[in-house]
Image 1 (cartoon, helix red, strand yellow):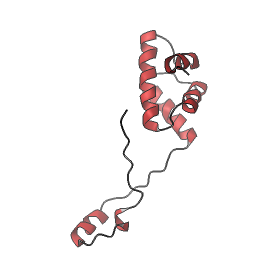
Image 2: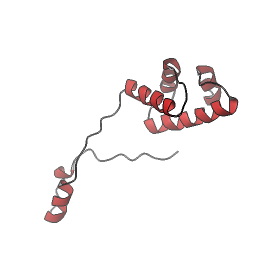
Image 3: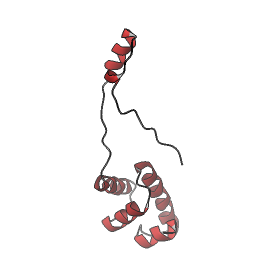
Image 4: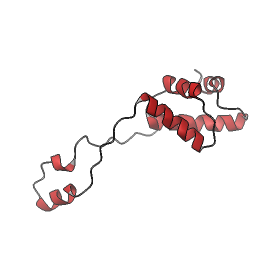
Amino acid sequence: MHDSYSPPNFSPQELSITLKDLRSRLQSIPVFKVETMSDKQSIEALKFRAEQRGMELNDATAEFIYRRSNRSIDQLMELLNKLDQVSLVKKRRLTIPLVKETMNW
């Protein structure tokens, strides 16, 4: 697995930069604050990604996966990739029994 990038929790305007040109350029960059997703939003993102891949992921199975896994969105998507491959090889729908079997849960 790979590490995630965590951006700083401040904007360029909050930096104490003495070089006027650099400060001006940094302050001209748009700043966006991205909030952490709630549990519900993470589950919905998992279901959305599954749907985009052509997988049927019902609420119960999505919640089962979420509650028993690392809740970072990157790792959830990696887990979904693994489950997708297993479901294709075994020609089985993505269900709680398949998830338990695949993940040894």
